[in-house]
Structures are given as C-alpha cells and as structure tokens.
Length: 197
Image 1 (cartoon, rainbow, N blue to C red):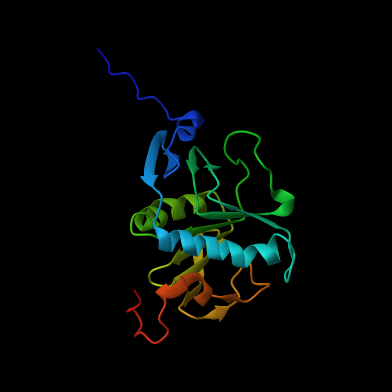
Image 2 (image 1 turned 90 degrees about the vertical axis):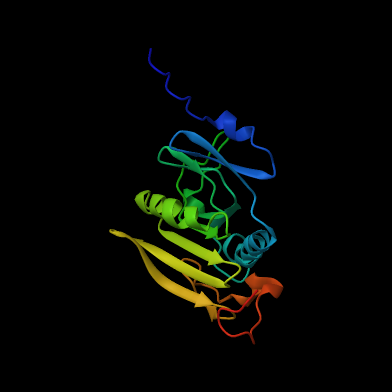
C-alpha cells in the first residue's frame, strides 16, 4: 500500500497561525516561527518611520512608493513574509484576499539570531530568482546595513555600512539615511568595532 502524499499548505493554514508567530509556505509546507524580539521589531519600525514620509507621502522626498510591514507575498510557489517590502506606486496592487501577487521592487530583511540563516540562505536566493530589484539586510545587533542590486547573475552588494554612518542607499537614495537612528540605545559610538551590545 502506498503512503498518501502530504497535504499542501494553503492560505487558510496561514490565517490560522497565532498572532505571536509568523507563518510562511515553503515548498508546500507550512512553516511557523515566533516573532523576533525587540531589537528586530524596533529596527523594522524605525526604518519604516524614516522611509515613509519621503517615499510614501512625498514629504522631504519624491513619494511614489508603497511600503508595507510583514506582507505575505507569493514568490513563485512559496508565500514568504519579508520584514518590509516596497512597491513603486504604479506597480502596487492591494490584494482583496490572499497574498500579494505582484512582486515588490524592494525587500528588507532585519536579521535576528533565529532568522539570519534563513534570510541569507533561503530568502536571498529566492528573491534573486524572482528578480526583486533591490534587497537590504539589516543586522540590529551588529548595527550594519547591506544593500544589494539585482543583476543578471544574482545580487551584487553595492553598499555596506555600520554604526553612525550617514549615506544614500538605493533605491531610497533621494534622502540621506542616518543609520544611528535604527539602532536605538544598542549602538555605542565609543565602543571598539564589534563590541556593540
């Protein structure tokens, strides 16, 4: 007698995930993990607060973007949940039900001890295969930002920065980003490099 094929996870399975967890569908399987801790949540919120006025609302910047926290997005056969995703306004389509089906123009993953390996080894290659033009990886403990641009061969690292750097980072290079604002009290500008808490 043959073993029946495992049931493929569905959108309804994602809707049943508890609020204190994040659910994703990977290879037809439901994956559930706890929400990351405070440094991750604070950094994600602070980055959104820095980008939204200029890029969503056109205050001090060009506008023309929609930026969403933790959207459920269909990437090929998977439904993944990046920490932040952004669409140029003319491409943005709000789903009436189910996941976002229009791929974003920018994705940001904020690394945490429980997600860093998945973000780097699973999500980064998936976003590259799906041709997401821009990817940022932010580490709120190491106080670093890495920005990648999609090239034909995959992602090319174009910016890496640490600590209190002030810089312009594509695709949001119309404004100067003050990295120190993302770290809260976790960054000590007087600590030797690599010694931040």
